[in-house]
Image (cartoon, rainbow, N blue to C red; front, side, top):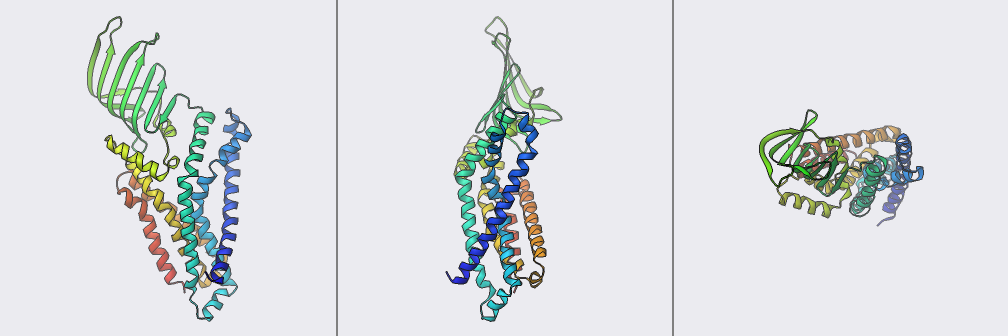
Length: 358
């Protein structure tokens, strides 16, 4: 590694650390104060509430890293441009693309770091954070989840949902057991699937068994479709589901295989599975785009304009990335394509932008 490369990497990490630290401190400060009323109305202490916010820092670090990489790369190249260091390099017969090598090295290094954090620290911290949120702050004590299985205690009913799709708000393998006041069995309803429609739950392919009191007999009825009033809503189920960020790549892959083996649609989780690999790759794209922006001639006298362009590019990426993921969740695009489309588009954009920079 040449002295020039070492110099660039040193300058990059100086700006990257400052930008990342500033954004994370602002996140902790704003998130803590914005939830203060909710914290005061719950059983959690203010110190515990701060710990709850801090638990989300590793996840936010990964989410904010691409933007910080882009801004730090623009800052380094922009200052080198303003101080005529890029001009000196060109005058020495060295292409400015020579400095793209350490930028790519840094992009790959941070991409690996993002993937490593997603495999080790983030699943643990996010699982703990969500537990505090739903069981301490919001006190959702009547709904429990273990992987895909959801158990709900609602009035005199005990409800089990074998699998819930948070995108389509549909449930599969639903069992509703009703008890009398003396805790004897009143009825049992088994439904193949159900969905939430116009404020009520509608179930299909139903077997309803009603226990005849003071006897051993059951009255069995079959329904193709039936509306059953229940006290919970889809958003209540989404809260307790184990999130993709609470699982590592291999754990999520194993979960997807298990869901598919049991005959359920795992599209939502397959999109998130591909996203776990696709998202860190954006680090490489951001250093290319940042280098191309910082090398532009106008940046020499207007670095803030370059920073503004960087913010716009980051915003465009997240908008397109989220839009493509939503198409994948809706089965409009295959999971692999939905996770990688934004990356491929911005990779082509970054390369073309960089080629025209010099």
